[in-house]
Length: 95
Image (tube, rainbow, N blue to C red; front, side, top):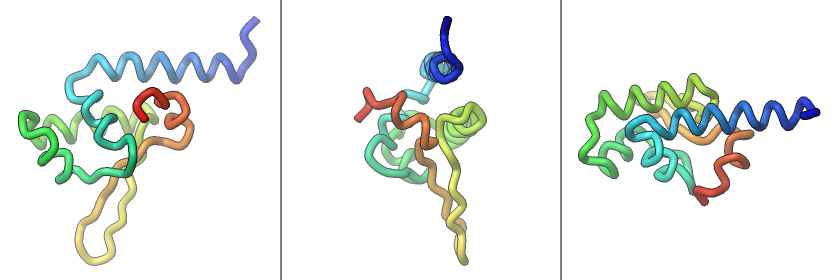
């Protein structure tokens, strides 16, 4: 019988596997493997991707709990994306 912790881990891996199939997800995850990343940085790193497509991919990753969006705005809009804490372990193969 699979214990609850293992079951949760399997669920998260399944979510990641589904998300990786989507366009730009792997490239986004690789871009943020060492540090949080801003949308503007992703636009520069992935010139073939439109800003709209990257934003949609980030929203999908965020809603699945893979990445977190941090609003660091003080005066000017400043948002970063980083791995959700528990996803960093699951996605360890990217580092």
